[in-house]
Image 1 (cartoon, rainbow, N blue to C red):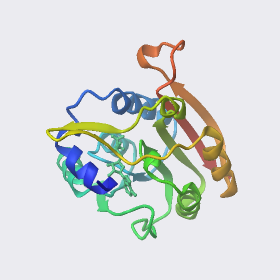
Image 2 (image 1 turned 135 degrees about the vertical axis):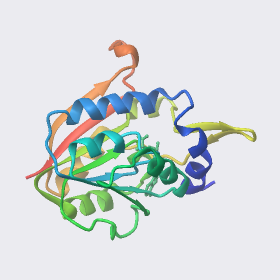
Image 3 (image 1 turned 90 degrees about the horizontal axis):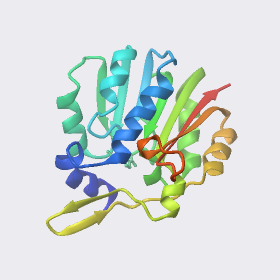
Amino acid sequence: MSIQQAYNSWAPQYDTNKNRTRDLEAVALRTTLASINFETCLEVGCGTGKNTEWLVRKAMHVTAVDLSEEMLERARKKVSSNKAEFVQADITQVWSFATQPYDLVSFSLVLEHISDLDHTFKQVAAVLNHGGHVYIGELHPFKQYTGTKARFDTEEGRQEVECYTHHVSDFVQAAKRYGLSLVDLNEYFDENDRTTIPRILTMLLQKV
Ligand SMILES: C[S@@+](CC[C@H](N)C(=O)[O-])C[C@H]1O[C@@H](n2cnc3c(N)ncnc32)[C@H](O)[C@@H]1O
């Protein structure tokens, strides 16, 4: 099953399944961006709009992009603000959906599905204003090392979505190649228990 087919199939249950990664990343994004100001935001892999809801309250405009029409349909229903524009697109292709310079580009739980970080960061650097930020919130690679993957259950059995492991240094070095500096890095743990493997890795980058 392709990544697009997998999310089209996951969409009806994405918001209601027990999913600690989804929920903890929502906390991580809000914590990381609470003190960051932005007027224009490009949300990459917006899914069902879990974070779009929050981003439109801070921004004047959010372009929210996703590969899956079924995920987007739910996002459109959830976020009625005319500050949000939803676009179906594949971010591994040319970024023709980025129609203006952005103060913030955000990625939540999407880069694990993207093999080529260089293509992604090159596009980010091109659409980001100077001084603008990039937020990345991902399933922590430490979790990936233990076998955790994006997965959901269907009547036909458990479906695993195609994933790639990016090490922490892969993110930081790819960002550096395109003029994006690391300004913050954090880790979020289940029940805030720092004796366990962290679930979510966040990075805040800035175009210098
Ligand atoms: C785990 S979901 C995360 C959704 C949302 N950001 C969240 O945190 O709940 C990953 C999303 O990335 C999208 N995605 C995966 N590959 C993509 C691609 N190449 N281009 C655009 N979106 C993609 C999927 O369709 C899916 O909605």
